[in-house]
Image 1 (tube, one colour):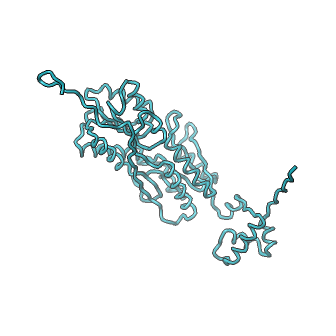
Image 2: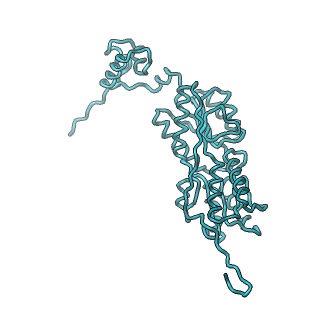
Image 3: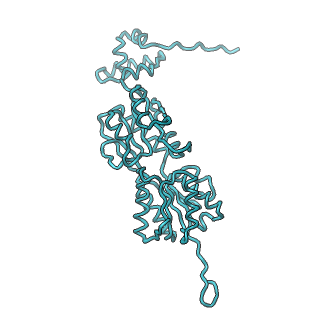
Length: 358
């Protein structure tokens, strides 16, 4: 029977200090790389710590630094219980990045009858978080206004209408929808309908602005009934598509505010017997994996959701470690991912004067 190796005893900072003949304060400061400790001493302390198997207490380290190494993420309030797939990707990247920095992620929901600001205030007062990541920002966002005054580090995934005095990472949503429109027009589409989100959400407002400006620039038809706002889920997308199919001048393409809305539209079109990509083209926005899994595959303006989560994690930890440092304000661009849901419009047969088909 193999011999079981005895478990190594945990070495305390007091034992490490005694072994080195140094004070506990000096050892602690050396382990935390304080500039007033000689480099030779730091190297000696760290070498002994490795040899003896010393592992710092996370709680003690956090108390010593005075930083709560936990980032809060309050889930934006939503109607019903639908899961936002974009936020799931963001959280995945955020959690990964925080774990690599030995920080924790605390995800909080909003109880019935409360709002996000109340939850943030409670988390700050309880000392449970050292910073926040805010997602799905509104043009005028009470969460951002509250955090501005709270003096706690935070970063916004997105922006508000006024965004010069805090850290943020956003996608150039307006340009992305101009690019999407340019692609549809390049394919030959001129009758393009828009399934948009809540205009109070800044990203939805920016995407709508991109659609409208590009439609005007290209001289596209925009009859009444071509633009829908407030489409937040698959069921709302299905209702909008039902209305569009009744339109006397049916569009040949749909530009959708998110992939989730676009997939809802594709399902509604398929249910109505419309061949997506042949009779009506569809473009979404997000680049989520589920867009590749449906048939036909969803043409989309892709943003690197997981990488966005990683980057906002890096930003908020850096902000927490150096609160006086300049705010990181980063604007990324989305890229067009072409699949089967968007193609040139179907050519209608035209009867000539002699009764032939041309």
